[in-house]
Length: 432
Ligand SMILES: Cc1cc2nc3c(=O)[nH]c(=O)nc-3n(C[C@H](O)[C@H](O)[C@H](O)COP(=O)(O)OP(=O)(O)OC[C@H]3O[C@@H](n4cnc5c(N)ncnc54)[C@H](O)[C@@H]3O)c2cc1C
Image 1 (cartoon, helix red, strand yellow):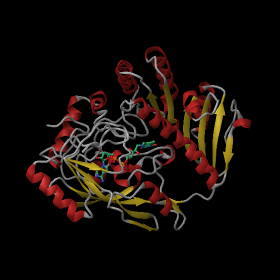
Image 2 (tube, helix red, strand yellow):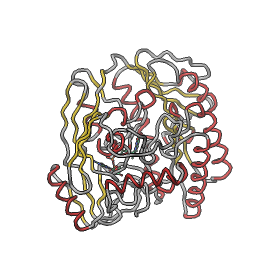
Image 3 (cartoon, helix red, strand yellow):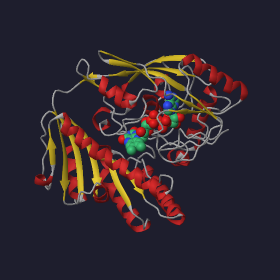
């Protein structure tokens, strides 16, 4: 059976199971372990790294894990529950769930496995910062429960982290860390998350939103640098000229903002009269759809082209935002020679580049250019994967981010939890 996630990374499984609860899941994992069958965990398949595309063996869909209970300060959520369902349940008791990966049809299990983030991570951090506890089915079928703060019971070295405000590339290891942090971002390679307890925050009383247009990229970045420290600002998203073309808006650059309280931003050089502002939830939803429409439009164009997604998820340290945009533009305009767009989470110096190759030669060239950019980003303290994980499509970038001893430390953790190397085979590391 052919199966691919949203990146079109080719996958196939001999069988796909959709267990109805932990007991069934545990039995499937125990059998897979006895018979040495690889198992790939499948959430909502919106991933962009090929992580949920099985490479043979069994696929295990978490779609039936749909528990959703909201209480003051927290929600208990089954791994297959969709993000949008958590987002719409949270307002009970005036609360909200802060992480906002823009694809709200993704599952909470997938969000945890990729340490997803998105637009509001600029203020609230990634999924990692909002998980209070996890239930996990381990490779041999045992079910474990881990609470925030429960330390791992084995030694790991400290893995050097990039200086970025977001990071999701490889295991996060540090001596004395907790189990919850180990499983978050592990991309289905250490265990299957069945349920999570998520933190809910008090909902802000008033939120203003806007899409602010600028006559140039330079002017937009100047504004981002001015606005980043403004209190209450919770979203800074960028759309370049090519992105706006896809959305049929004839402008050079846009920055999408959300601020808790009244918008109080210095609009120097902004095209204020052409810009859109709104206070109501429906205005914000319109802006959100506009922003997400771009991500979907890009996906559509990639699928039409018939090639696997060739885009980046790199982030730089926030103080290197201007520098990284300069590096991207000069390299892409000099070496790429095909259409591309650049957009995303500029508050975190985290811009996605997506390329649109029309043939194999262009695809190979674009891949080489984007791989070169990965090295350039790491050189200035950045990450090769900020929110999508590396999956299979970008597993080769683990070696760009980390030295061999750090990768060996991660592999040792993988062997401890999954000695037969059955879970998420091909994600992050080659098997072995
Ligand atoms: C148009 C578009 C826009 C997007 N925008 C964003 C964005 O702004 N921010 C962002 O962070 N991401 C974004 N994404 C990527 C994607 O939505 C996220 O990576 C999301 O977290 C994937 O969730 P999923 O349920 O679809 O996971 P899947 O694609 O099904 O799986 C992703 C990975 O998680 C593993 N996994 C899934 N469920 C579990 C589980 N229960 N236990 C253990 N491992 C599991 C899989 O094996 C795989 O490795 C976007 C995607 C699209 C298509």
